[in-house]
Length: 242
Ligand code: SAM
Image (tube, rainbow, N blue to C red; front, side, top):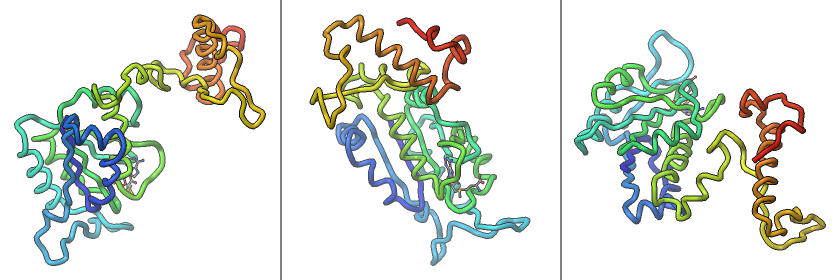
C-alpha cells in the first residue's frame, strides 16, 4: 500500500518510523511518503494561511499550496488515490471503515491546521482523488496530523503481513461488534489478584464460553450501544451462549 501525508509539520509524522509500521515501511509493505506543504508556496514567508472571507475568528489554509501539493502527489502514480481529509465534521473512523481503507492501494492524507482548508480544495481534488472527510471523534484537535497517525495505524495493521500473527486481528475489540475479553499473563498471582481459574483449566470449550460471556458483559457495561438490538437491554441471564 502506498501512503502519502501532506502537512505543514512533517516532523509530526516521525512515529511512522517506529514499531510495526516502521518495520512495514522498511520491508516495503508500506510505501510511505511525507510532504511539507510549505514546499508548494512561492513567497518569502512560505505562507499557507490567510484571513477568512466573510470575517470570523482564525485563519484558513490557502487553496494554492494545497492544489499544487495534491497535483504533485497525484502525478506520482497512474491510479486514482483516496484522499483522506481528517476533520471533526467527517465520517467517524471505526473498524469497518478501517477495513475498507485497508483494501485500497493508495491513501493520501491532507492534514489541515488553523480553521481548516479552503472549501474549494475539496471540489478541486475530486477530479483526481476519491475524497473522504474522516473524523476521529466528536471533539476538536489542533491539526490533522494526530488523526492521520491514528488512521494510518488502524488501517496499516490490517494490511496482510504488517501484523505477524494475523489470527490476533480477528479476536480484537470491534472486529465483530463486541469488545475484547479480559486478558492475563504470568504470574498467576500478583498484588493479591488472581488469574481466573477457568483460564488455568486447560478446558478450551469452557475458556471459549467464558471469554464470550466476558465480551458480552463488558460490551453491555462499557458500550451498550454496540450490542445487537436483540441483546441490548436483555436481562443478564439472557446474555449467554458461545
Ligand atoms: N474549524 C474546524 C471545525 O470547526 O470543524 C476545526 C478545525 S481544527 C482546529 C484544525 C484541524 O484539525 C482540522 O482541519 C482537522 O484537520 C483536524 N481535526 C480537528 N479535530 C479533528 C477530529 N475530531 N478528527 C479528525 N481531524 C480533526
